[in-house]
Amino acid sequence: MTYNSFILCTLLTFSICLHGISAMDYFVTNEAASTPGGIRFDKEIGIPYTKQIMGTSIDFIWHTVFQQNSPYDQKPLDSVSVYIVEYEGVAVAWGNNNINISSIFLQGAEGDLKWIFTSVFYHEMTHVFQWNGEGHAPSGLMEGVADYTKLKAGYAQDQGFAKPGQGDSWDQGYDVTARFLEYCDEIVPGFVASLNKLMRFDFDVKFFEYLTEKPVDQLWMEYKAKYGQ
Ligand SMILES: *[C@@H]1O[C@H](CO)[C@@H](O)[C@H](O)[C@H]1NC(C)=O
Ligand SMILES: [Zn+2]
Image 1: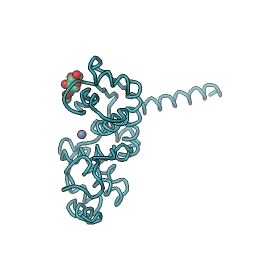
Image 2: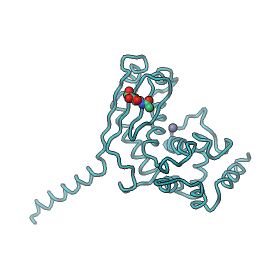
Image 3: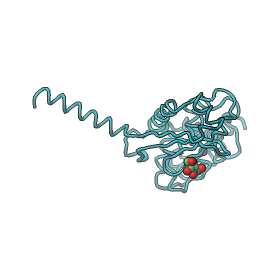
Image 4: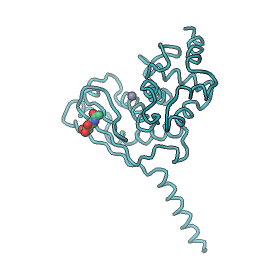
């Protein structure tokens, strides 16, 4: 092999590797472009920024939250589509790889719209990539994991996001469950990543015990006690 063909081979292998890792297409469609919320989206957020945070959030979810550094551990998707749609609601992940964001929500949001959008985005993008125990995981846990990503990414809102120790049960969902998962992660580093991995093919509440050596109810009580509640 000549020196030049060696370089060429190396470059080819490298680009095939890169392609294998990052072959993800991002599609963004503003279907509400003529509505006040859709106009606000174009002005304050825009499609280029949306594609940028699609990449950033997916990277964060794979590598930081779920610690799926091998493509074999990741959900096998080759594209994600985002739609700005006029409907009553905030946002929803649907199908295998789609996210709808409400233009009505964007229209009414108060404050830094880009920040609010990004925060919602981390949550919804987690739904696209998390395992759900083939449909057996409780929805409160699914929502908790999605809010956990938001929390870890630094996009938990100052007002309205639960403080550590708040809430009534581990599977209450959203911010309450996210704080509990944060606690589990303190006890067993990588807990959320390990739990998600176990949830690939099924769900069993005993996963908590398997990972921490404590049943989930005991964990919840100790968590509440730690914060004096
Ligand atoms: C999301 O928006 C798309 C495009 O308008 C629509 O086809 C789809 O039904 C919507 N999904 C949900 C769950 O609302
Ligand atoms: Zn959700």
